[in-house]
Picture 1 (tube, rainbow, N blue to C red):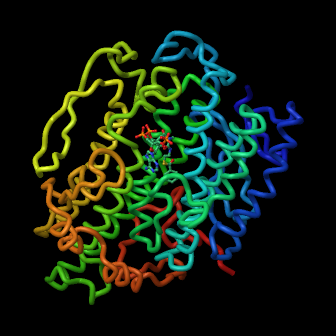
Picture 2 (picture 1 turned 60 degrees about the vertical axis):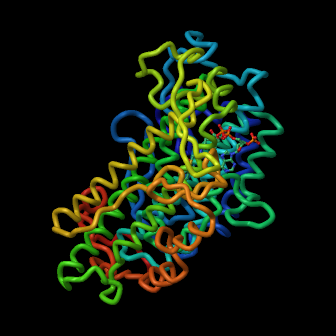
Picture 3 (picture 1 turned 90 degrees about the vertical axis):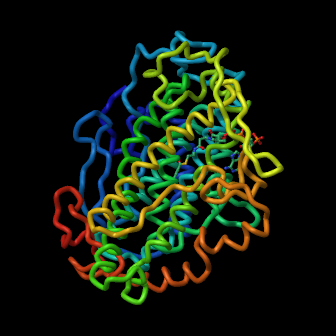
Length: 473
Ligand code: BYC
């Protein structure tokens, strides 16, 4: 399998597409539908060139090339990480066998479902972010938005390639449906809840790329372990692109907190809204919202789906090969805190194999805490007496064992009326959202930035902050 990407082809790829005319024709049939979708559901703002990175090879070094690109001409393509000819299945009942280059019949439905769910999230996020280009706080941010969007578009290509290449007619139908469902649509919504929420302002965008893209990192990490080698290889390459998306989130929230801290010090008050900054309690409410809708993306804490995927070798654990156990998980148990109807908590013992979503969520939560730590350090360094925190895992949940319970951010089980009466202190209110939106005015002069966010410490690809990242005329 060549590592070099063929950019001469209509669909750039490193999977020798030209040698499979049927597949090539099928994908070339899907391509104009994708471009139509991009035109209708992709970024609203018209530009004349965005400083974007494009993959040139999938190897360890030098895979990205930077240049100004006219966004609709971006070369979306199919890029799989290099094949390891000796790769063997790392877990489950087929452990030790060579990985699969084709889909085994008995796992076809499950694999297709996992790929469809993964594929559905990618265009959904582009749809959610459609209008953000109209209000970017700087050209640097605008460029990052487009970078994230084109790569999510490419991730859709990654899943569509698998559906077309390995799942026959049903796969092709599913690939069509990925363009048919839309975020927030009452008739044909996206599959997972978080992808039907609005990303209506730039603080929400930073939070989304911090918390929701991070779910992407962990889910892709488990699919990278898959025995189905083409899925594993495509996820491995997607993870490289994903890292930048999370960088946009992490540093985006850093910059909002930094700016708020500066305004608090300058005016000696936490009430910085009138000074054009975002108050810390509103930032905390955004954290509470985006973190909890992202927790829902891990599914139920105990899941026979996840157990079956694992045993079959379809979906592993985070860093499966680094774990020191039998990779079968037939024995072993773990502990799970559950809310009781009477408002108390109990701890149940559950089989490790059934608790794989919980395991993955635990890895994710630890990672999320690293953001909280760095944002608190900004406050501590500014000698501001306020600290962010992740809410309790049961707070504001719609999926899993906490759904239907009313749990406060500190983990107290309360009745519905108590929860509802305090909700405005925990989650963004209409007033908060309206206020944040009122700050969202586009700032498109080179080197300038909106009032509510600090400039980045570094530009992209060693360019300065005042570089013309986007040509608007
Ligand atoms: N919403 O056994 P359960 C990303 C369903 S993000 C709606 O508890 P399971 C990205 C579930 O389908 C990563 N339905 O959970 C980020 C099942 O339905 P059926 C996306 C839900 O199956 C930013 C039933 O409830 N990738 O890449 O172990 C920008 C019982 O399910 C939800 C993936 O998620 C929900 N939140 O786990 C761009 C990887 N949760 O079968 C991109 C692929 C559960 O009874 N997906 N249900 O009809 C999976 O691995 C699993 O499907 C899930 C759910 C982790 C989502």
